[in-house]
Structure formats: structure tokens, C-alpha cells
Image: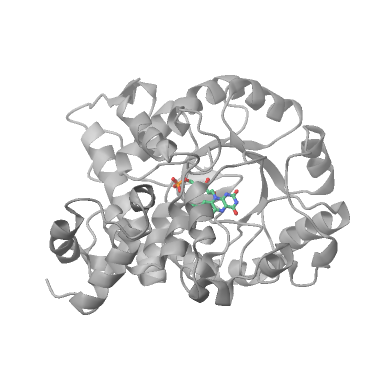
Length: 406
Ligand SMILES: Cc1cc2nc3c(=O)[nH]c(=O)nc-3n(C[C@H](O)[C@H](O)[C@H](O)COP(=O)(O)O)c2cc1C
């Protein structure tokens, strides 16, 4: 296969990537793991050259491992502590088996779902991920157009590079807005109002990272070079001056963080907006119950894509106790580690109303912009349709607890 870049260029990029990986750091800066050189040709030959060539979402991951700047790659790819949750989240799916039913006419499969009165063609949604211009100049706008092509839900991060108004226009339909509260309630309330005025139908309060330990990016920053420092100035003001929703803010007096928050903040949000309020980052039945007590209209089960605590519990394993506590009263969406149509199917069978992807669409975005994100969504939807046909389920409603053995 002919490579997009010259082989030498790609080889250098891959060497840089491997040399800055935690493994190489562990061995001593610059040292390559034994045998890595020998695998280079094979790896490079296997890389896709266009979105159409991708057979699964991992093809995009392999591409960005080589082509994305190392620091950007680690900002995106890192998990908590020793990266174990990345594996834990994937392994959770293997603990659930499928119970296929035969001889059901699945010539026409309908993957559409409805949430808060809005119909989407797919239950595979776009999770809020901050600063998408890091991965492609069109950032959230490219993702919005791809979400529009797939007619699926996009949840926009507070730390978006593009404004909620521009992203809504690019999507061509209402978004949900994800909230990281600021230290200034007046500013936060104005931001919520702005999202509401832009047409957002839901507000998702993220509560799962009161603190976090992400070593790869900290290690990379510690060792980072002049090339990185040319764009990245230290400090809050520098980081937030490029975030669209903070363009008019007095950054010298603003702070972020959820460490001081308690459940009355959910009440406060309910009073402050007519949007549906969801809580993102719930992993226990107890907290699901508290969400309902405080009037939440929905829950997102999530461990922040492996970036929250190193709990050893995958997101899909946390889902049942949340669903039990909710007992069908509000929609429950789940994310963290979804990479295959069968993963989506299993979550739906447990009772989720939809699932979100984070890193997979960033891989697509970083590799090829909007067409990359479109292809990632198309692949997951194709895989979901395939497993639905294999399982004899013609629509999302027919995917039930009897479809799985957990
Ligand atoms: C690079 C990156 C940035 C993220 N930024 C945010 C954010 O701004 N707000 C938020 O609630 N979650 C954020 N998340 C978490 C995602 O919303 C989502 O929970 C997670 O990515 C899903 O897991 P997955 O990446 O394994 O698919 C981010 C995740 C990544 C990878």
C-alpha cells in the first residue's frame, strides 16, 4: 500500500510517538521497546489512506497514533493513573453475552431513537469533548456537520473552541450543552442562558472529575519542547482565552472546578433553566437515586472515558445498578469505551436510551476532519445494524434484556 506521507516521514513520526510513550519513558527517554523497529514496516503498511478504507474505528486510532502530534495524542488518549481503565472499560463488554434469535425477518432494521421529543437516526451520540480544534482546524464545526449527516445527537463541551451558536448552525438541529461550572455563578448562569437561547434542549452537568491524575500528558508537558510551548502558554487565562464561550469573560477572576459542588447545585440548575438537566458521570445506584431526588431529567453513566478514578469498574458494569435505581423514570445514556456495534447493542439491551462516543470520533476528526467523523459514525451504525440482524431485533425497542446474558 502506498503511504500518504513519504515512508521516512511517517517512520520518524512513529519513532517520535513510540519514544514519547509511557513505556519508552519507563525505559529511559529515547529508548525504543525491544522489537519496535522490526514492527515499523508492518504498522506503516497497515495504515489507512482515506476514511473509506477504514474497516473499523480502530483503523483511525492507528492512523492518529502515527500522524497526530505526540502531545495532542496523549491529551486525547490518556487514562487515569496507569491507564488500566482503558482496558477495564473494554473488558466490561466481554462479560455480557448475546442470545441470538433466529428466523425473524430483519430485512428492514430501524436504528432510530427518540429523546426529549427529538428523533435521531441512531443511538450512537457524540460525547462532549473539549478543545476539538486541537485535532482539526474545523474542530466542533466539522463534528457538527458529521453529526448532521448521521442525524445524531451532539453534546457540546463547555470548553468548545467554537461557539454554541456556530455549532448549532453547523449541526442544523438543537444540541445538548455540557456544563463545567465556573467559580462565578453570574457568569455560569449567563452561559447556560446562552446555550438555551441557541436552542439547546438539555444541559449535562459533568460531576466525575473533582480531581484527577493523568500522567501521560503531565509527563509530556514536563518534557515538552519549544514547538509545543509556542502555542501553549501556562495558566488558566491562556488556556481559556481560546475557548469560545469565554471570549467575553474576565479570565483574571474566573476559576473552574467541581470539587466544591454538592447536590443542591442540581436544584440550582433546575431553577435556572428550562432545558432538561442531566448529570454526567454517575456510576452508582445511590447517586442515580439522588439525581432523581434533585429533579434531574436524565443521567449519563460515564467514567469520563477512563479519565476519572481508577475504579476497576467499567462503565457498562455500572449501568445496571443505575438503571435499577432509575426504574425507567428518566432516560439513561452511557459512555466510556464504546468501540463496536455489539457494545452499543449490549448497552441498549441493558436498558440504556443511547450511548456516546468520545475518542473514536476524535480519531476520525484528527485523521480526516468531517469525513473521518462521518465514517466513524457510519461504521458503528453499520455494525449495530449487523448485530441487530444477527439477533433478530428489528428496531431499538425490540432489543431487550432477553437479548443478552449478563
Ligand atoms: C480529549 C477528551 C476531552 C474531553 N472533554 C470533556 C469535556 O469537556 N466535558 C465532558 O463532560 N467530558 C469530556 N470528555 C469525556 C467524554 O465526554 C466522554 O465521557 C468520553 O470520552 C467517553 O469515552 P470514550 O472516549 O472511551 O468513548 C473528554 C474526553 C476526551 C477523550
